[in-house]
Length: 292
Image 1 (cartoon, helix red, strand yellow):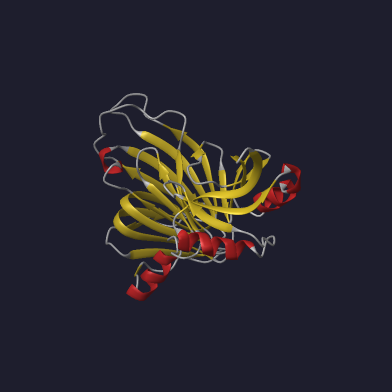
Image 2 (cartoon, rainbow, N blue to C red):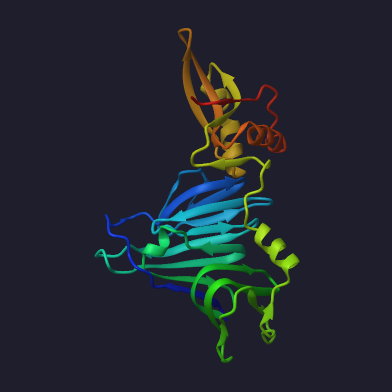
């Protein structure tokens, strides 16, 4: 059995240009994280444009913050696997955004914003062992090897699984829990302490090396005259889910090649990122600086 989480949010559509091609962008990142498309695997970068067919994977202690084209936010916790199966922008201004997303593993949160509330949408999210038809603005859920959870924070959710009778969640802060290969548990009110723990699973953690689409800090891990001397380190970092790049600069008439990570949120986040990367490769002369 599979869990299909259906987000059907019918709201007034904001007049303006239609969005085409892109599903959305990566707005925030706590490494490591990867994006897979067919046979290609790359590290996730802030500002990266997402397309149908992309699969996003997060590692230990990682987080992702995505902004969909119609304005909604999707947050992913650590060790998550999330696939954008399909996405269709409205063909005309007052039509509906349609999409099919899959949460194969881990915690996620889907939240509408002031911008997205102006749009109409039908977004299906598959989670692993039941089917939830959602009309809401704030949903949290998690797919694990032993159970699947759908938590209603705001709105309405109808959950079905197999031949079971549909279950309506229409009271805020109630959740549906389905143990694998066992009957679903009665709907329950989430405890405030548990709610805080679950919500934290999908939030970026300050001081843990956060990257943002508007981040102005850069971590420079190495600066060399010969690019070939840092290509192995670049490949290692990218394979481990760190969005490193090689940037070429000219200083006093000399060409230098820097191994950098851009889009870091602050000096504190940069220092934390440098410390975390020592487990991947040793960088004795790493430093951070702010782009003006």
